[in-house]
Length: 105
Image 1 (cartoon, rainbow, N blue to C red):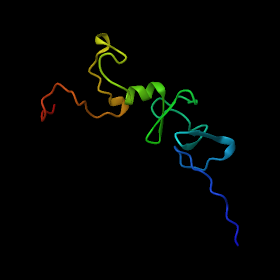
Image 2 (cartoon, rainbow, N blue to C red):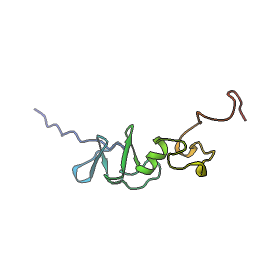
Image 3 (cartoon, rainbow, N blue to C red):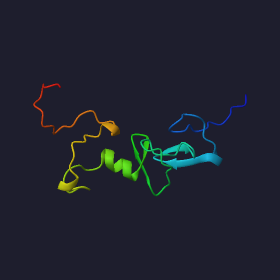
Image 4 (spheres, one colour):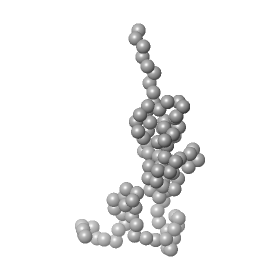
């Protein structure tokens, strides 16, 4: 019977092997300590500020901005209203725009 090396888990971000001395568990996957950071702001994560969405890690602030509730009463109010639809977060368009459909500028 030939020698068969044990399977080593792959990092959720870089897809390289993760060994026990450098692993961090989150979202059902193993991560390198250096790869365990927010996908948007690159902030180092800990177990207390880590959120996972579709095998991607975010800090609680970025997760709330990208996937949290939107509108008046959720972190802003009338004084914080803006025309920002979140292009910097990967959003392409807003479902509640004030332009008629079919109009391109």
